[in-house]
Image 1 (cartoon, rainbow over the protein chains, first blue to last red):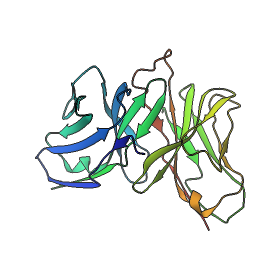
Image 2 (cartoon, each protein chain N blue to C red; image 1 turned 135 degrees about the vertical axis):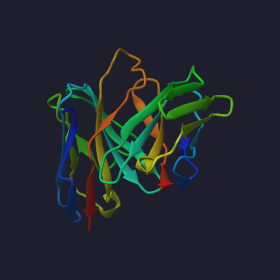
Image 3 (tube, helix red, strand yellow; image 1 turned 180 degrees about the vertical axis):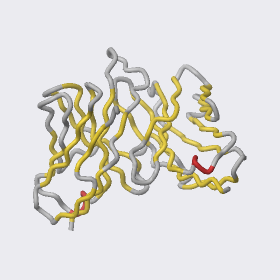
Length: 111
Length: 117
């Protein structure tokens, strides 16, 4: 049973427009949510996180929104750039140090 | 440069032939973990370690062993590999800050693609 779900395997966006990547979770005990970005032949790298007590966190072009009542979070990238083309993993931390990952969404940003 | 180094990056082997994937980090991180990435399943944790000589099972530990004899190294051992262990493997590490680790941001290695025939 997947506790962290990314239902869109891929997303295609025009350069300069907004990219919205979605993630749903089932466990209300998660205390942090994170997004990682992965380029081909590289390991995932940390992008942005949000505490479960917050509803928004912003870092430059990247903003993560958390809706706890819906058990949903989203990553907004504005404006999208071709270099943002990658696989994005949503992850949730369950107290301690255990991190559970979603299946990933492949983002294509077209120039 | 702060990094997690995995070797080999690519390996093709046959069923039953023991192999070890090495992982080393230079950041003095206490926490280390192994994940496997499979299509549609994301990253699943195999084993993790919270310090030297302290290891525990993740979500998919069957067929794998680990050891943590030194803080910087966390090798993944496949005693008798089978085709269902064909996957992309990632080692990761992080600092442990108190009991609650905050976001526990992981630093990943570049990955090791293993094919078992």
